[in-house]
Amino acid sequence: MSEQKCDVVIVGAGFAGLYLLHRLRGLGFSTRVFETGSGVGGTWYWNRYPGARCDVESMQYSYSFSEELEQEWWWPEKFSAQPDILAYANHVADRFDLRRDIDFDTTVTSAHFDEGKRRWAMETATGEQISARFCIMATGCISTAQTPDFEGLSNYKGATYHTGNWPHDGVDFTGQRIAVIGTGSSGIQAIPVLAEQADHVTVFQRTPNYSLPTQNQPMTAEYAQSWKDNYPALREEQRHTGKGSIRDLNDESALAVSAEDRDAMYTKRWAVGGTGFLSAYNDLIFSREANETAAEFVRNQIRATVRDPQVAERLVAKDYPIGAKRICVDSGYFETYNRDNVALVDISEAPIERITDSGLVVQDQSFDFDAIVFATGFDAMTGTLFKIDIQGRAGAELRTKWDAGPRTYLGLMCESFPNMFMITGPGSPSVLSNMIVSIEQHVDLVTDTLVHMRDRNLVVMEPTLEAEDDWVEEVNAAAYKTVYPAAASWYMGANIPGKPRIFMPYIGGVGVYRKICEKMVADGYKGFRFESDANAAAAE
Ligand code: FAD
Ligand code: N01
Image (tube, rainbow, N blue to C red):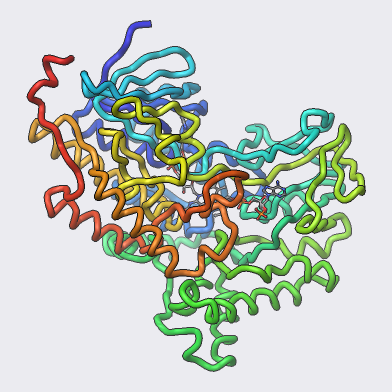
């Protein structure tokens, strides 16, 4: 197969890849996108489990780059369900005629930087070879589903499913006894819906989780219009918030008010629903003592909801701060444990020993199931990149460079890997934010940078080791000012055996991070080095 050439290869056709393609095409760069899936949408293409839903309000979890798109799209619910978000991604792909530059069912397997040509040589699983000046990894942070390596798994004769790779035609569990392993955001969303359908559901919980009620509602025309009438100002406000969403942050300490006032505040926010609960006070993520007041409120909500006190106590998280693992948002999760067809098995002390041909064994007790649902999460932030053989200058391997945890400058690029960008990479606000806001910020920054280089005949861009070192330190320091590192979370790599424990995203805030990037550009791309076109044409 002959090698093809283009200016930019984008890996991934989720929200990041789609917007990248749209912008780069508009700027006159020849661009190809490769996508493993058969369609667009990324997360929302793969995660089709029952109950999958966004916990950022629909009017905020959407692109801001096109006023027409903003005005014409109708979201049916306050918090969108997966099918509606996938429909939106498909609409975007059609409306901006994006599909013609996307190769679906095509996985990029390797990307090597050719120092002579100063281009990336990339290969796909179908054997295609393509050479590009720039390689942009829009591969997603939560895109490699993780099934634990349980002993005996291959012997199991029933059906198995992973929430992160759910069958496209759905699954009918009617009349079945099923197991759900995992009580993170995906499990907590899926379990209430599965319990309505299956004959019996047994939930295997390793760590109890905090979850807040969504209090989802149908969208009203008035509410949608209130956003549409003010979108430019509201989008600008979003971009300068801490999390990329407009939430009513109460700028006072939880410890500065009386217990009665706190209780009233938490009760009010619980009734409103959603993650805004964690904005009730300004120190919930900074002070363990302040955090404990919110955590205890949620524990008491669980105790008041679940009728069996022993089950309730098993569902209550006690060992880590609320929010330090990704906060969950649910529709009737704790109520589900009042159903006769739902059982909770605590595996915090005694893990799943092995999978058998008919089910699994915990502490010598055998359970039989027709199906097992793995809601066991993802090899987040690094796992998807490590599946690609990425080699930079002098054959430097990304896997080796990130041996002790990811190292980037601004979550955008890393030293030794010139002209390779990551959208919402480790070291950027990324998974701690409304990700569409963070995606748009990175895409705008990267595409503006490519124009900057083109205008000046610059062909190579790479961060300096010093800038990278400083940023890694900054990301770490920011994390340890908060309560986040107190939990064994996937933010810390703790869900994957052997993965280095390091807090991966930048917690300093979306608005703060945007300003840091703007200053970096204003200071002449401080921390990056460039090479000009001098010998590049001859080398090609
Ligand atoms: P993705 O959507 O993950 O897309 C990456 C794409 O790259 C995938 O389609 C993948 O197939 C493709 N790809 C990867 N490697 C290769 C390769 N080697 N070759 C070819 N293609 C490749 N964020 C929020 O802000 N709010 C939420 O409420 C929220 N809810 C979520 C719920 C779930 C169930 C999950 C899993 C994530 C959620 N997220 C949420 C995060 C979500 O991932 C982002 O909001 C956003 O969709 C990410 O878009 P992306 O384009 O960066 O990555
Ligand atoms: O994955 P998770 P997820 N034996 O890693 C358990 C986004 N998202 O798919 O906590 C037994 O959170 C594990 O136990 P423990 C969001 O960013 C958002 O649910 O590690 N159990 C945990 O209970 C989210 O954070 C929404 O002890 C094992 C569960 O499996 C991210 O995606 C919805 C195990 C995994 O939870 C990932 O969420 C869905 C083992 N060997 C997803 N290994 C929204 O609502 C793991 N577990 C916005």
